[in-house]
Length: 112
Image (tube, rainbow, N blue to C red; front, side, top):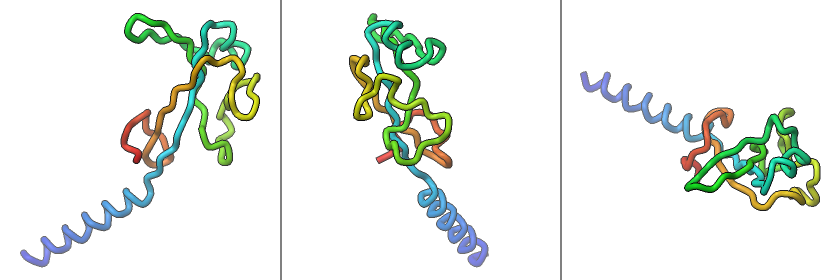
């Protein structure tokens, strides 16, 4: 019986170490715009979204990786008008984080 318990502890410890070692945290940004026209000039209108938060409406561009060194093919980047990595039309930028295997997780605060 004691032998079985020690095996469970060893497997659980190795599993936890594997998850911690494989997990990575990627930082993402998305531009905030004053109007649809500015967002459409940086991206297609299809990728721009509207969100309302506490009575204010925001026009948001798509998420893109903050670290521009390792980009997936589908990354939309900071926009067509970007200079030095920043859109010239955006009025602000929202930051989010994704964590997990392959960074498939939704925006989370699990990264540190």
